[in-house]
Figure 1: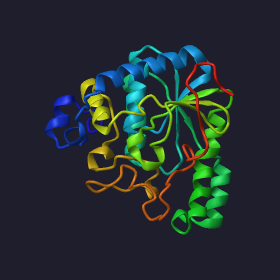
Figure 2: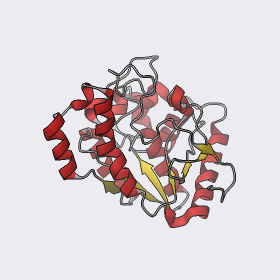
Figure 3: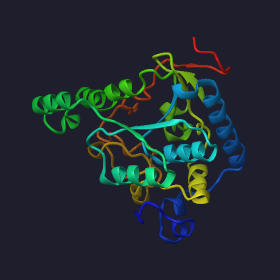
Length: 263
C-alpha cells in the first residue's frame, strides 16, 4: 500500500496531488476548527443514529480522520457499486488498517444488477442519461437506502467549490427523506483539503495523483485537465450541467441552523 499511504515528504517530492494542490486558504484554521465543532455537535445530537457516508474520496478521508482525531465513535459506511476502481478498493482496505476501524460496505442487490445487465448490457450509461440514472439508482441509491435505515443523520464530504450545483448547499440541511445532512467541509477549498492531508498523513486514493479530483465508478470517471471543474471527469459525455448520481442531487433541501430542528 506504499502507493496510497504516502508520507508528507513524499507528497512534495513525487509530483502528487498534494504538491499540486496543498495551498491552505487564509481561513484554513478557522474552517478546520468549525468542522471539528460541527462533527462534535452532530454526534452529541444524534449519537448512534449518525453515520459518515464515505465515497473514499479525499474529502471523505479527511472527515474520517477528523472523526478519529476527535474520538467520535461514528459509524463509517461506503457503497461498493461493483464497478469501483481497483485503487478505491485498495484504499478501503488501507483505511481500515490505518484507523483501526471497520467500514460498513453496502452493495447493490446482486440479482437486480444481473437482471439489469442482461437486459441493458454492461455499460448502458453511455447510451442515454435515463439509463445512466437507472444504473446509479440500482448501484447507489438502493444500497444507500438500506444503509440509512434506522439512521436520522449523515455526514458527507460536499464542498461548494466542487461544482456550481453544490455552491448553494448548506452545512446542515434536511434531505428529501427528512434526515439531517451535515457537510463539515462545505467552505473548504481544495487547497485546504490537501493541506490537511499532508499535515496529518491521511491515506488517499492513488488516482488523485493522476488528476482524478472526483472518483466514482470506473466507467463513469476520467481524469480532468488543468482548469476544468473538479467534477468534469464525472459522466463527461453528458451535456446536462447537473451531473449527479442522485446521492446529492439538486433538490429543494431545506437549510436548518439549530440543533433539534428536523421538520
